[in-house]
Length: 123
Image (cartoon, rainbow, N blue to C red; front, side):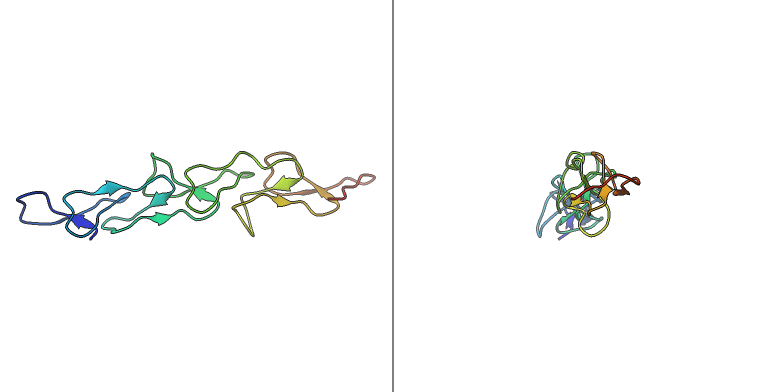
């Protein structure tokens, strides 16, 4: 597994990064979007939350841009987090987090900011 042998070949060849094979394979198969592999892999693994892999990057998980999020095994990052939330960094990179009282965030923010003196935010 993780390598293949072409018909009538006297050797097995390791699959390149971004591809995998099972036992007795005659070729390697590309990992699905949202999954990656290293050279010689017999399976592909999911990208972690907050990262993604698309058809252009089956051997590396790319980080989501600040202010956007993704679930484990994603092929893209979700659109920017809505007003009052932030995302892509910290506790849970798979969903947008709400700002605490006294703080606010514009759409697509990667953190919350303190309200200015004389202003407030309940949420």
